[in-house]
Image 1: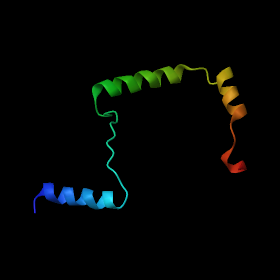
Image 2: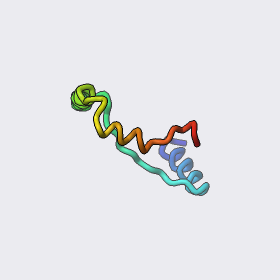
Image 3: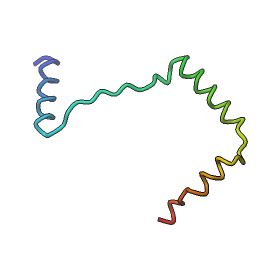
Length: 68
């Protein structure tokens, strides 16, 4: 039995169990473009004032997971 037939049978069994195939496209973290953009965004975050009003708001509305 060839690969194509085995894959076809596997997919048939999975569909019979109620599953369906899903294809997901994700960023290629190995690409130079991704690396440049990640470094750019990291540098921006590193320069942000850690004591801004935005962070105060986030902390005020956040719930400590240990309290639930």
